[in-house]
Amino acid sequence: MNAPTTTPGAASKTAFKELVFSGIQPSGFLHLGNYLGAVVRFVELQNRYTCIYCVVDMHAITVWQDPQELTRTIREVTAAYIASGIDPKKHIVFNQSQVAEHAELAWVFNCVARLGWLNRMTQFKEKVGKDRENASVGLYAYPNLMAADILVYRATTVPVGEDQKQHVELARDIAQKFNHDYAASIAARGFGDAFFPLPDPLIQGPATRVMSLRDGSKKMSKSDPSDQSRINLTDDADAIALKIRRAKTDPEPLPTEEKALDARPEADNLVGIYAALANKTKAEVLKEFGGAQFSTFKPALADLLVAKLSPVTAEMRRLMADPGYIDQVLADGSARAQALAAETMKAVKDIVGFVRR
Figure 1 (cartoon, rainbow, N blue to C red):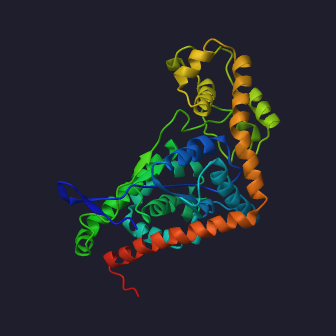
Figure 2 (tube, rainbow, N blue to C red; figure 1 turned 135 degrees about the horizontal axis):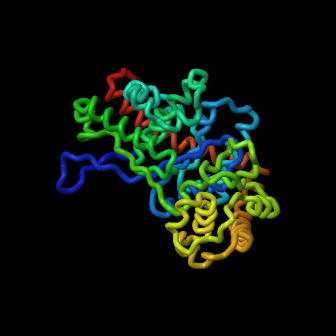
Figure 3 (cartoon, helix red, strand yellow; figure 1 turned 45 degrees about the vertical axis):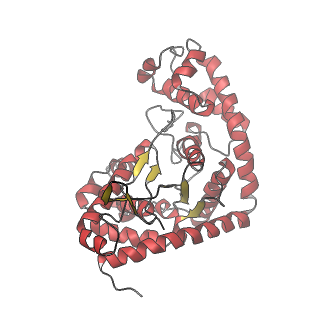
């Protein structure tokens, strides 16, 4: 458990051990946006932090999922984590539904969070549109469960895409209100002036939000009905080349200055993808390709995609052929995660005033 300590010279302020938590929903096929916006970041962070990476299957069922397909996608996300370089022995890789404390803490947070906070969540509004009355309660309360996912481990850092930043900010609000509402009880149990940390969202890199190949104003999505809108991690070289060739662009050559990309969303998206894959800035990519036609840039981008993704795809396929191994990774990770989460929940129950064994 992340036992709090006090910072030098600030004895009244609780400090927390640095811990990274994040997760991916197992709904639909994993795509390039998931890879660049999440998985690549996860791999980088494991060299500097203690990390917990979750397959958030309870979030997936906020909209209906075919049970057999959900089982497959839980294993696929796990395979993608491992194939990309996450070490499940050094860090924790597990699926959310195997650790009941996520749901248990989420209920406490349902009683801490305010209705007005959830009403401001823009992602819920975007997902349900005008069909709000037909949305599941789970989809509405999703941010409270996400806060519980993070705070049940008292994580301090959450790598997320830009679209999830508001949810991490809500987790901070919930943590702060819990700490305030139960301040006396927290102090009486030796936790200083705060039990939960205020987690920070970590958004970095040139392609933190990868957009659709068919519409540069929309995020690349598993739910888009057009498979041509995304690069799936399971796509072969021919499929990748075809999708990039068909990707929407404008008739102008690539600009030489990054500022000029602001008014050209499709060009900005493709340049951002290249930059992320090549570990370069957009300015460096434009220094190389500025003034070139897309007929020159697209083949170079397709070649880079194939070179970077092919090893990951091959390893994912190998792992998916051995579901027993993947299930064992998840079972081991869940046991380790549950041990941490149980300690948090014991303390939360004491702080709130529940009677427990």
